[in-house]
Each structure stands twice: as structure tokens, then as C-alpha cells.
Image 1: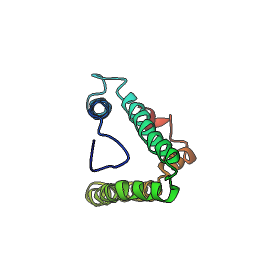
Image 2: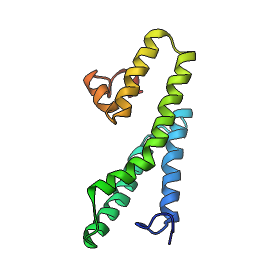
Image 3: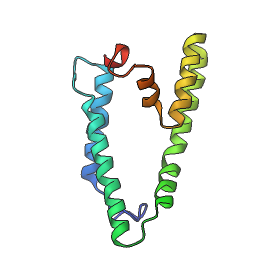
Length: 135
């Protein structure tokens, strides 16, 4: 049992699946012809997350201890520090390597990304499954 997360026992098999999922996406982006279907790793990661999150919710409901507020507070504490770091790093690097119009687009995407709505921006701009996003 993990003492770090009182909601779940540690599962090394799930860590292994996460590693496979992440590596497949990284290989796909680095060497697309080597693993053309590597983007399936994103789907694998979503299924793993759904399984784990569902388990937390179900156990909380069974124990009558589930709180939606605490559930989201834990997610925010876990996800936001990394999200903020990545967004700031992108903006900083973008300042040095992008042209003004590209940097403006990056800033817009960063704002939408900070609100977990990046996909909505791409749908609004008809960028999902078209152009560069489809490659």
C-alpha cells in the first residue's frame, strides 16, 4: 500500500502501462515513421486515468466520504503547479524563438490552455483534424 495516496494502493502494472503510453507518444512525435500509431498512447493514458479516477469516486461514495470539492482540490494541487511551469516555459522560450504573429498565437493558446479549453479553441478555429494538427 502506498502511504502517499490514501485513496489507492500502488499499482506497478499501471505505472508500466503509463510508461508504454507516454513512450509511444514520444516515439511517434520524434520518429513518426517508426511508430505511426503511437498517438494511441494518449487514449491509453485517458483510459488509465478514467479507471483510477472512477475507483477513487466509487470508493468515496461507498464509504460516504466523497466530496466533489475535495476531489477537485486534490486535482488542482496535483496538476496546476506543472501546468503553470509548462505554460510559463513555453511563453519564455517562445519569446526568443517565435516571430511576433506566432508569439501572439502562442499567447492565445496559453490562455485557453490555462483554462483547460485548448481543444475548444482549436475546434473554434477549425484546426482539429485539419492542416498541421492532422499530420
